[in-house]
Length: 216
Image (cartoon, rainbow, N blue to C red; front, top):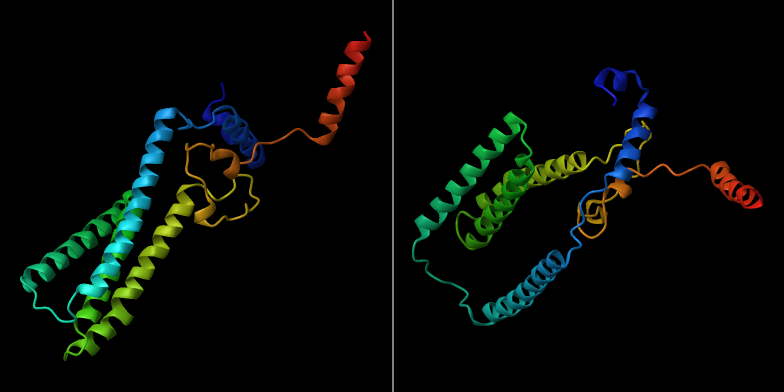
């Protein structure tokens, strides 16, 4: 069994080949069981149904809602939303300070709330004296912060799933929408850390050895 000292004495290329060999042996657990497949099918069906239902509901609202409406609890709605945004900022700052993986989720939630804040600020202040302030705030504060959060989350995701190569050679950086989920149907390790295959010379020798054994 290799200990830490022996691993440190190995070259980066040797360690990379060892990792690829271990990855080829210990493949991640696949969720290809019937129960997992059934849950995945139910989840996809629910998402598709929500998309269809939301599209119908949005069309209905566009046709039936009045152009202007007096809100019931304007103060409660905005104070509650800003409190949620404040809590998200605090949790995001804590996760960044403590260097926790939950920072990725916090950044995505923060970007979503900032985009919602910008949208409602601008649309609800149309034809009011505060429209220009809301528009400038959205352009120069909320949307740039949301973009920074999304870019930061994307970078952390790429680092977390190991898009860097261990042997020093840069791997092709796949877009996140092409990176497979870990453990779902197809193992994700072979796509990120390719398994070392025998050289052509070794593959050519295999048939010859079989022929020699048959001749004997």
